[in-house]
Image (cartoon, rainbow, N blue to C red; front, top):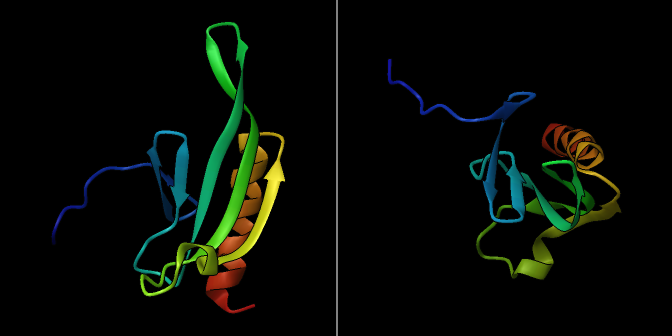
Length: 96
């Protein structure tokens, strides 16, 4: 059995970060969630996301980037975005 690389998973789907973008889901699936951190605030030594943009996107490489967006929303924190994104992704992948 081939070993998988370790990585952060949430509710059975991978989370990947590149700069201020967080991708939730697999490019092998039909849909993926993109979370963009738009603003941050300091809380002691931690930098916390204070404004995030959430998008449910199609993974079809033949579509233009603006045509890939199925749903979008602005949210006040990262937890809300990941929570809502997991619901959107689960519903989209199940066909509901």
